Image 1 (cartoon, one colour):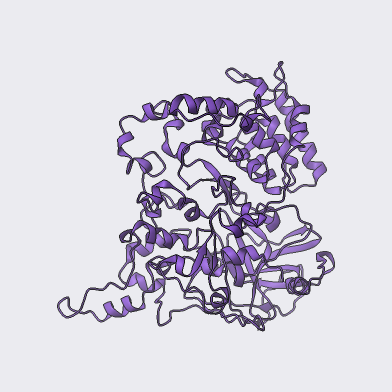
Image 2 (tube, helix red, strand yellow):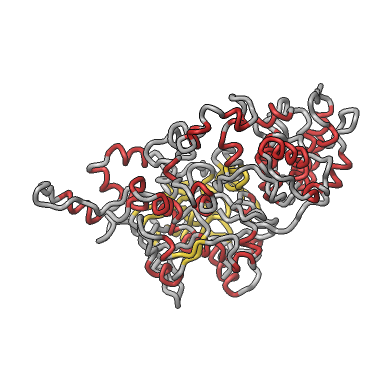
Length: 613
């Protein structure tokens, strides 16, 4: 069965389900009254090793409250009116030949869709599944994953106690349903893809998830202690700790309680491995054992004993185009959510003492989005270790003190990773370089109108960095590096650069009146995620906040929308002062050099890239 082997390699999972028949309820008026299959989530509860997060509230009220506000807590939830963010108001969609309808009955949520069990069976047999002719079934939504960017929904199978992901997700900021294939960076597909929670989510999205898969029948009898990323994922099993303190021992008669783990008290490597259990690229050393009994790893253990952490130089990585897609050519991780893998290559980690908790916290954070400790969005993040630069920032950066070029993070952790429909800061923590010409560098992510040759000269003049091989920019000596990535790059480069074009800092640095015509070429990109980002970026430019465009519309409508946007831009009053118009594909009269842009776009790197998230 084709259930995304890559998810097995990088994430793993399992779940338990049982089927019941529901009594008659308030039925959706658009459908005749009929009994509906009702499902359940895996049994949840403490065991002889794990106590469960709710037990922690007995003593740790403040810590429990800060965790409870986090998106880690709501990563997996039982489907309830409090957890479900989508309206389920009877919306009906047709996608890739299938019809999907989302509705609710009182406090329960349902979907009508082509039978996923039939699709799973067809994939198991290696036969073709036709969504358009499949049997239409109703299923209850029993579980959710995600609550920050988008939310996915899970339904039960008829057999084998499996959970299948509904082929749509709800995008929270856009307030709309989006097909799964159009929510992740994936090559164009004519077929809806399915994913099984049992194989792809449980080890990261639950605590003490035990798949209990029968390797012969593929039946699951999964149990979990907690849904979501809860206390014992980071602090280790708590049963011994809880039992010890419930006995109320006197300090004189009992030894100190050392059963729990505090990540901040571990060395930087073991501490970071706690986050790395999920935020990394890895494979299990004992996959059958995991599918049966769950993770052997416990917070504070040496993670390398129970899983193999991938490295760019590994032979099996080099021989797998699927794995290689997650790296830039210099070995820098570009797949979001794998920050620990990236940080392992940082000198700050290898020869220093940086850990995830240097900047992040589960309990003391500015906001929930990135779990960053106060002040960690600024140079303070780096200066807490590199204090020698505090009084000579401008001398080091060659930028004004208030310039974005003097924020250490922008140069040493540029936005060159991709995930969740956006660019994410690289966690390799290195210095700007042209050593990997395929990886957008920090300078050209802000100086959108400058060439690689310009960047090469600046790095040589300021930091005495040896000039790179002249062949680096031989292909486009007069073209802005950002424009080259945007038009001719692979899907990741196009997505990263389209996101960079929305940066307020980049617009202030490079001007903001020449980018829109270039972005219109991405409105018909073959990757729907690239189209999504291009549209979002265009809306950040003055006069284009309300453009009439839908990234999921048929190709003909998308092209018409792009033409209207280009016509609207051509009517605006514009100034290109300080911009080398030739490098950004403008004609001498300030009009867009559309023909040259089209020619370069047709030269783009079209190799298939799929990013699991």
